[in-house]
Image (cartoon, rainbow, N blue to C red):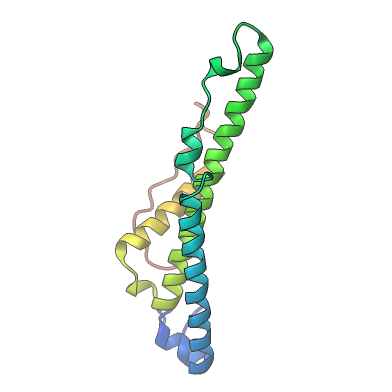
Length: 153
């Protein structure tokens, strides 16, 4: 969405939609951001956090040794556990990205800390890399480093 000031900042948005409507939208975004921040904090403090899930991994001998079914079960367990770790990490990153984009929409891109913008681009790059088919070694193909960007996604 192009805004009158060309930078997506608050004065252009206020002029485009009217000051009263703009104030209501900013308040809605701030409320949304506080809810998103609370969700991220709750996730990171729960058993579903990536760190907690990583700490709950079984070793192969826990399910038995010397028979194929135990190995098959452990293999399935390891795959599910890896997927849970990925899900937890991705969820945390997406919630953090939502929080940053709310900051960008209320403060304007130029008024958000450089480190927050860099984190947003890092999350974007990681999400993009996760969408690529695996490389020859089985890992996702690396994304090109984007660094700090200016402008929209």
